[in-house]
Length: 336
Image (cartoon, rainbow, N blue to C red; front, top):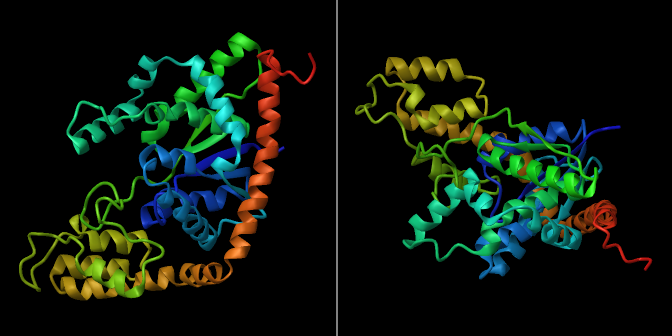
């Protein structure tokens, strides 16, 4: 039997190239090799957007369209919405008794994100909610609900997988062998840099190219991309390795990459020329995705059915896990 993979993405906006190259491209391969569950994690998105739930709701459809447009195949992948699986929430409650508040605060991923919140809001953590601190427990419920054996993650997410493994071990120790201990499947691609050279691409940083961007939007963004700051005049030699334009030429595998590199080093290629070539190549790269997006935007009823069908399949799987968990905990009251 194929091993099961569970992965998820929060509906906080459209997919950008960081998502595509950092995770989604790998998912397209994995869906051919494993039983693949892909969760649109709207409940987890509410930990940051509890006061603006309409944003999360709107982004669920947009995210689903993006995922289908890049090649996620509903015949190979169970694509579902987290909130339509109430069993996850029930498992979260049970698992919350197996982990201490102190342990959650020691989780490196949680610590980092809390520090970011403190810096953003300028307080001592008063804005940090119970749901935010406890989301690793909810994530453990996501993984175990679908008997996830392999979890695709970046290195920064490894502490969350270890937290899940601890919960699984503790549950099995107390109640008997019930849950599978997941293993991390590290992404083969490092984090994708933003147009400004930042190590992270993101909406809040304003440095991302989105799969939904128009040709005009992409043109404006690339024309503002960071280049080698030591290059003053058009014919000055430059270092392509510190230039974000060259970085994206490499990312989308421009077939003239060697020429771009050589001309940049010699000073025979101006930055404007290089950017214009990247705009053309980027739009060629995104063209098939745009065409699929147009189709799904015009057939939203098909997207809705894919999500409904996927959520039904996922719910059935989660129901089975929850029944096993409650039986082992001696709280399955179908028969008194």
